Image 1 (cartoon, rainbow over the protein chains, first blue to last red):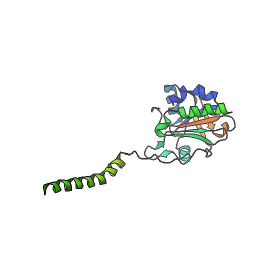
Image 2: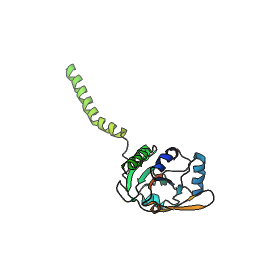
Image 3: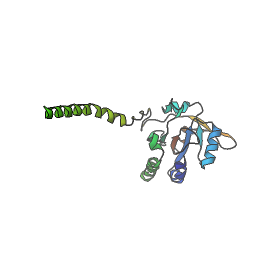
Image 4: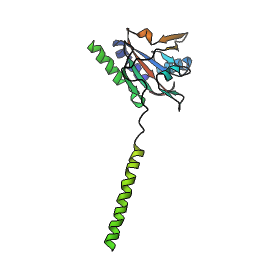
Length: 103
Length: 83
């Protein structure tokens, strides 16, 4: 999440809204956001319905896999970063920048 | 007799190594990550989720950004973990 915060200006300049999602409660997520200085919303998928809908619920951890989706203005998925690859959002930031240039 | 014994031993050793090697290699390989249900190009399912802004619960849906901005959905495992 911190990595997205560091790139937030770039992403916003490329018309991109960042939303964190986890299965924590809204209040835990708010405390987490404050602690690490995240200013974008951290959404609470309490119960995990959306996590399951996106097919990334892990039985083993009773939680979501670490996955970043970049979703375009048309609602279609443009990029995915999965597990370890999802820690560094560079691929997504670059994709947003490219989109901005190609407009 | 002696040289033949040595070459037999070597032969046995080579056969054993040939059998074991692929198995050892397979054990060292990391398991492939599970395939993704949603792929690039698929429509992202709409959702409505809440977050707490410090005073109120706010509702966010994916569809509210349709036609307005791209959205990064960053799923993470638990609050208070790295990354």
